[in-house]
Image (tube, rainbow, N blue to C red; front, side):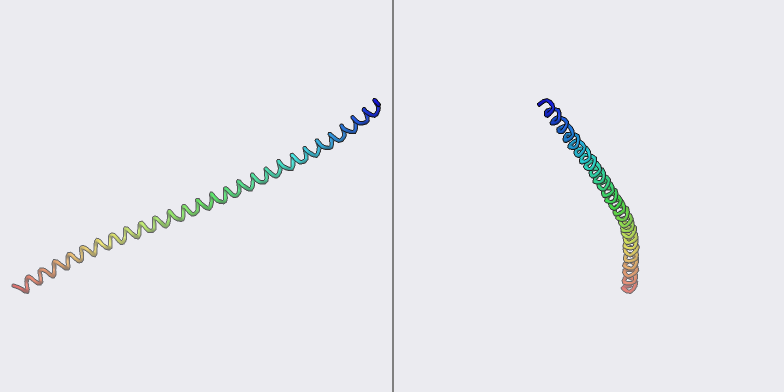
Length: 100
């Protein structure tokens, strides 16, 4: 019976070694998959950050262009107001001289 027990023990040891090897292989595979997922996640995050940075820069350029247009329009409006005041003043002077 001792021989049978030793034989069983050896068999169980071999089975345990096979199971441990399978577990190690599975663990290695899972670590590799996790590493791949992390790498893909980092790449996606980088792409999103690059896209966000690009969109932000584009928006800043557009905002600056709009500010410049607003500034030009404000200057134009100011010059038009001055022209209107000048014309109004000339009209009043003409009206006054016609009345005299």
